[in-house]
Amino acid sequence: MKISKVAAASARRLFGLCQRGERLDEAKLRRVVAGLIELKPRDYAAILAALQRLTRLALERREVTVESAVELDGASRQRVLAGLTHQYGEDLVVQYQVNAALLGGLRIRVGDDVLDGSVQGRLDRFANSL
Image (cartoon, rainbow, N blue to C red):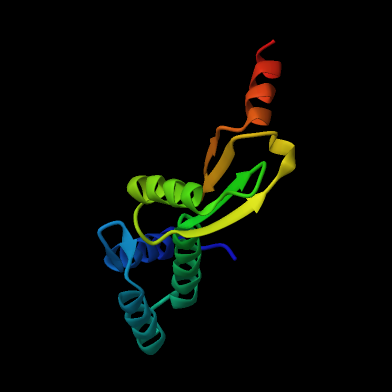
C-alpha cells in the first residue's frame, strides 16, 4: 500500500512520542494505536501501517544472532553478551548458532550490523583484495 507523505510523517512523529530514550515504550505505543483506532483521523489506516513497519524495524534492531564454528561455553557466551550489552543496550534477544563453515571465530549480527571476526570472513576479504 502506498502511504502519503503526510501519513508517513504523522507515523514517524507518533513513533517518536512512543520512545523513551532510544527504547520503544510498548505501553505508550498501545495507547497511541488505541487512540488512532478510536478517533479515526484522515488516512488513519496508512498511519497504522507505517507505525507497524516502524515498530517491526525497531524490534529487529534488538535481535542478535551469534554464529560460531563450535559450541560456545557459558563463560564465552557471557563475555559476548556483556560486550553486546555494553555497545547496544540491555534488552537484546540473543540466539546462538553453530556454523562449521566459519572455520573459527565469531560472526555476530545485531539488526543490520554484521561483526565478522570469523576465519572464513577473513579469507573471503583476503581473496577479494587480490
